[in-house]
Image (cartoon, rainbow, N blue to C red; front, side):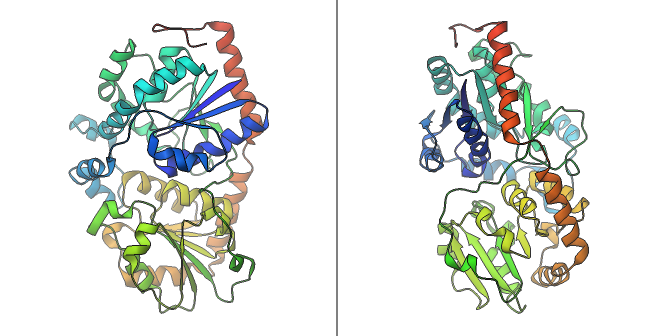
Length: 406
């Protein structure tokens, strides 16, 4: 079986595809990863064959312009859940940026699919070029989500946002379901949405990129260890984001060891740090979170998923609607607490960290969530599901929309 895995170029998105790719390779199948040129170096460091599709563009200003001009930003800053039906009625277009990303990838992804002829395509949930190209080529499309299923809430916006993309592929409006033929779901069931969408639970070993474990990880910390990470694109949010430096200063008076996990760009802008803080650059979270007593973050899917697998309580300050959805679901399990961005202050952060450290209730809930996540179906069984999709496709037909793709 040939498995094509594809994502856009943000590492935090294609990282979610890597464990599935390894599982397919381990089962003896051919695997190819397709990402925009900017993602090739990072994806290839995972030890997988990678090919560039499409072209790069500076998406950060586009995302920032859309996000801060949308009422969704204000709702999220208050920690509220977005009423997507109301946003849709008001003409909101949250898929506009993703549709633009897809336009840069679609033609090359189509050419690759026609030439390499995969039996199954596994795609990052917001790489909307993938399910459309898969439909045009008669290839089963499998959606990979990164926790609480935020992208399913955006599906009603897809017909309008992707109309031109479908037309270029000769697809009708009801072809190329953006939810795919199957959804791989790593989210613990107690955190997932109850919205009637069929998802296949999978055990997802966290992968946050390649890296070398430093020797201090082998040493038992003498004080409670708190990981602080603000993601890889915190600069995108400018002054609207509670700054990482402010978090570190807020925790400087506590008798704890702080590990600040940052990108090189954030490290350059961080300046001097408190005496109780150790700064690490590009150190994969999955290497050290199990040795932490608390994780303080922006609530992105990658860090929340890694902390769940490590069984560590979490304190989050989300900044986007996706992160609010994740963090509210996490808090509902008792394994974490959420501070709305508008409410975040040094005093409140310090107070919440002190309260959560040593909280037996939060520790018990975090361990229960870890057991729930690890009890899901192993990826080896998920490979068999992909094989079944490929076999059904082979038995049912080869092509649609033009040239044969298998």
